[in-house]
Length: 319
Image (cartoon, rainbow, N blue to C red):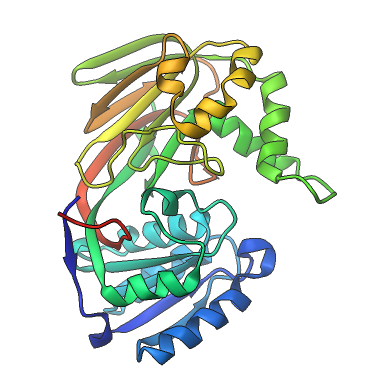
């Protein structure tokens, strides 16, 4: 993993905070972090992404105004919105530097980059200014060869079971506390989900048949700590694709531990993995897709990777 260093004290950082993240505690947590940043003479300007999609609008506007140094504060959804805003702005994204403070609930992207639960440590690493040229994925949704939608992602795009869990969570939020919303949705979805007939095509790979789920990954974790793509690297210019074939409910339950450890790729029979720069996914039945918990428009999906397209803070030591 190659990295470069930036003297962060030379710039004014535009901070996009989602106050609704971490069950509404994110702004309070940011206020504590901002004190630490001020003590290090790091200049910050606060912008509140207090509604769905506001992070995208803010990041797009800030880049269009000439800003190139941003901090996304929140969970994976906040990161996703800011990344999409950067790429929708039309600027040269290789000029943009993005730092992330993972103050959400799942913080899956941050797991690959070894961020700490201690924000004092995260501020210390930010002060070091170690950035990597991070790959970015782009999902285009088509119907009859007409592009319907385009979304960028910095972590993982999931299709099939993953996306159906997000659909359940979005439409059936529980009215009580004490259990993870995602885990509750996952359990509900297992009992009603049916594997999908897929056609997956890449330059040197073809899959046709029923699939429980598939992911196209730049990083390794999603779904609150599931290590679905254990070999993925965010700067190798490739998507790591994992396809789990049709399996029983019992097989899924039995392999929960393996999925969180990343050993499912060997433990579940028939799993297929490959690396590619682009692929297409089609299905004759309804196939949902998602990126960082955001449902995609349904259709035929074409996924590409943009190698080294964004400078992103990392805690992983470079070579």
